[in-house]
Length: 209
Image (cartoon, rainbow, N blue to C red):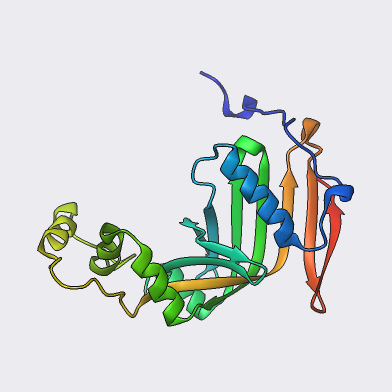
């Protein structure tokens, strides 16, 4: 049996040097994200969302990025889910993208705020009907007796009526104040570039690996 302590990769697919770093971190994120799309990364928009609960204990789960711009990063969820309640209590969150195929990672710290109801409705209406119905019949994060009970809710849903976005479902915009880019390098001497928002302007520095 292979010992876990002997699992090891020697990264060699890229580098992140100062001469290649744009002034705004979203430009670098966009370049990396577009590369992930063309590189065959599976679900490149999958990101780990970290929150803090009422007991000041960290919690994380994987969600899907649905939009990004220089304003920040957008995802959608049930506002009454665990993550929605935790964001309501403490909007400080962390995001993490890991693209192993490219040996790249991006870590983001920021503040979460709800997007407009119109923006949430527009996105909800663009989803497949099955995804819309799932958002309606599932009380996300709440206990349920069995899979059969969930299937029963699905089978009893009246699909003859318009499928309307629930009030408790919508998007969050994560406005970043720190973004770190990590590029795997040989001998664990990885490239790490950290952008911080200082007085409304982005500044970056190299971090030791």
